[in-house]
Length: 194
Image 1 (cartoon, helix red, strand yellow):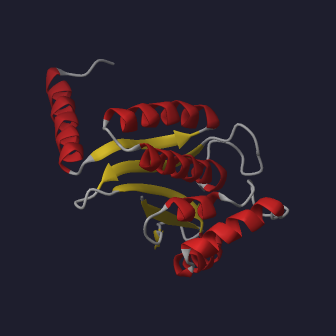
Image 2 (cartoon, one colour):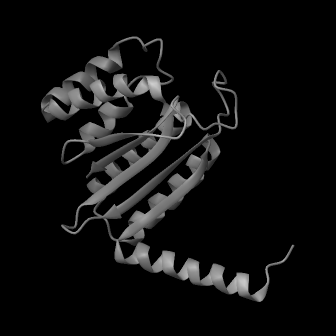
C-alpha cells in the first residue's frame, strides 16, 4: 500500500533529521538489523570505502576494519534475537547494531549492541573486565597464546574476537549490560576507541 503524501513527508522529514543528527555526531557508518555472513561482507566493503573516502589514515583504517569485523561476528554468533535456530552454526541470521564515528577529540570509535542470553552476562563481564585491566603487551601475549590453544567448547570462533578488538584499541574497552523486558535476555553494549 503506497504512503499518503503526509506519511511520505513525515518519513522524509524523519530521514533528514536522522541524517542531520548523524552528521552532527560524526557518524561514518551505522547499521541496525539482522546480521549474516553475506551482510557483513557487504557492510565490510561499504565500511572500507567510507573510511577511505573520509581520509582516515591507513593504520587506523586497518584497526577499525579489523574491530568492525570481530564485533559483527560477535553479533552473528551470540545475539539472542535470531531468525535461525540457536543450534544452527552456519548461515546464522541474528539481530544487532553497529556504529562507527569520530568523537569530539578526533578519535574513531565503534559501538555495537545486541541482545544476549542473560546467563552469559557474568561470563562476558569477567572476560571484558580482565581485558580492561591488561596492558597492551599482555593483550598481545594472550592473543598469541590463543592462536596456539584449542578453541573453547562454548566458543563459535577461535576465541580471538575480544582480544583482537582490545589489541587494536587505543583505550580500554567500554561495555555495559542492561536488563530487558524479558528476564532471560540482556542488552550488551560494547565500545572501542581506535
